[in-house]
Length: 152
Image (cartoon, rainbow, N blue to C red; front, side, top):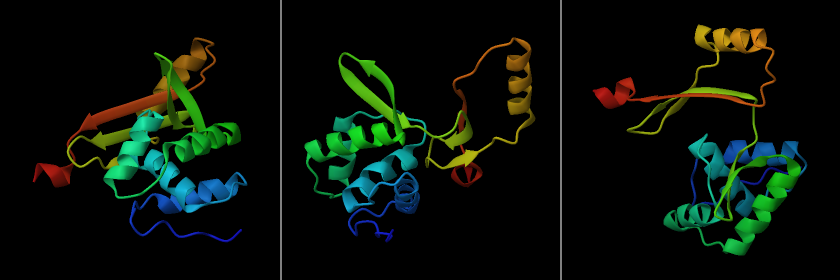
């Protein structure tokens, strides 16, 4: 499949990740789909509803109809790219359907995220869960603080 560059007005570095993911699951990587999925790669573990996605795109001068977002999100859920994280008051919140184990540190100042899956703490948690004979659907550890760059 031909790789489509991200829209010029929306320059999320995560656009390449989004395009690759769409291609891996066999979906056409249109500019709108790349823009929508890029937001999920950018925010990581946060769950988003369609109205919030629309606001983010509008704030980045990306013209898109909410119906396009609904259609894309439904398609992403069907393809296994997104999962419905929760439904509150009839509003569905979506999240990336990536790994069973997500561990990261997040800077609350600049938003930079770093994977920490190699920490001994993660392996310790896995061992303890196994000892308890517990089937894990998903394991998430997020440590929020301030990175070295933002402290200086």
